[in-house]
Figure 1: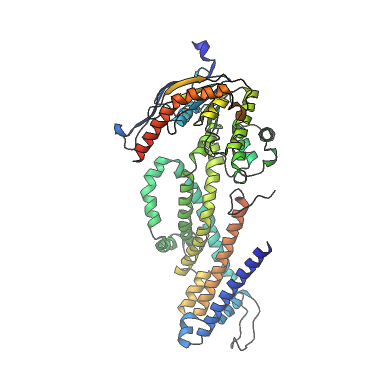
Figure 2: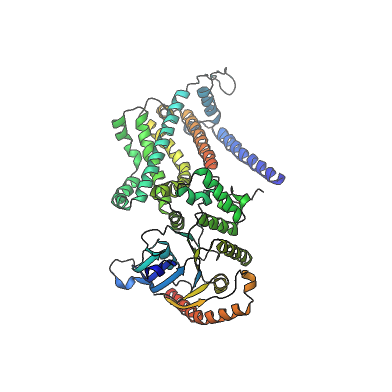
Length: 278
Length: 277
């Protein structure tokens, strides 16, 4: 037990050391003027994040000759991006779950729609962004629509697969125990599909973010994608990197949230190396 | 005829079961699993069906359960022709059939919930059944937290909780080690002796069949499986599975039945080799 904790803390130490080494190397390389134009400078990236999030300015010093402004002005943008992501994630998951359940249990409809679903999935859906911008305007809904198309197919195919692969023995057993069609759906198909949905949610939460940010990048007036697009227009590479860091952090946060909910709901699933607690 | 018919809990009459091949219309690819089979189980009787592997024993059981419609022939349940699922039968499957996302107790409650038994009553009945199979303290465990034998006990409780008049069992203990298996066999015999339900028990283990049954039916090797022998097991009850095996009469019956079964097992084995080649 103690050895395991030791091992875990050593690993954690190694992870931090790797991060610091990469940052130090980057900072060192950024002394080159050519390099800093294209790849920026970690300290300046950190300074940008400070200005975005904190209301306190920093006076001019050795690291920041011009000082740092305490703007705390990212919340409006971040809130927009997160709202789009969460909306798209929720709508896409519910639609995917419903469509997946329906088509898996209705073989005729599924056979008719099959080629169209394959086509829709194969299509690079990011090109829909201009159309959505036309339909839904430049507000959040065009971004939500784009992200929904990304999330929907992931969840849909997983649920479809999950329902089709419910063990026939489980179904036969439930039918022998007297289940009608509705009870089968509630006690066998849905819980079985849920396991598959959760395995797809980790992928789809990332894609919801992609849809929202790409949508903002292609045309919007607010959002982290908009910030990145503005900074790129003025070759402000430090701000672009700062935007990437912020997005990555919040994507990880959402993923962690999904993981927590999954562990809460999926207690019945065996985990590797789990021992019985008596 | 009709008066006598109701003596039987389950009757499979002139059953034939042909599976269509992959390509529609190609008669060569269709496969007849069961042909001209008549099998009757009296109320309260314990009947075992033995036969070589892959001979269509499970097909026969699925037909009795109403999960599979026969190509020809008739199934009667207490004299009534069967249509759809056999509501008076409980089925214990060979494979794992517990819902992995429900605890042992919730699994046992499943059938009661389907029948609309009030939640509190279903809970009490399920708990009583878990105790009867020796798992009273394990109700909150999920199937993956139980051993193979415990899962089988839970499945047994799940099937019996609905108090079916006919119990169908498809090699229920084949995955268990020999000690656990003998314990389970004794438990099933005790439960059966208390309730006297009709049991149709499928197995490939002749010892198990003789030790538990009133009657053993031997099936031929597939395709077109049909019964080729029937033996009344006149060993006294109650029986202990481990002890009855050494009785002289048991050995005698075993030799008789094995003489019939052996050729079929060899035939079935040859066929499997041919299919594999």
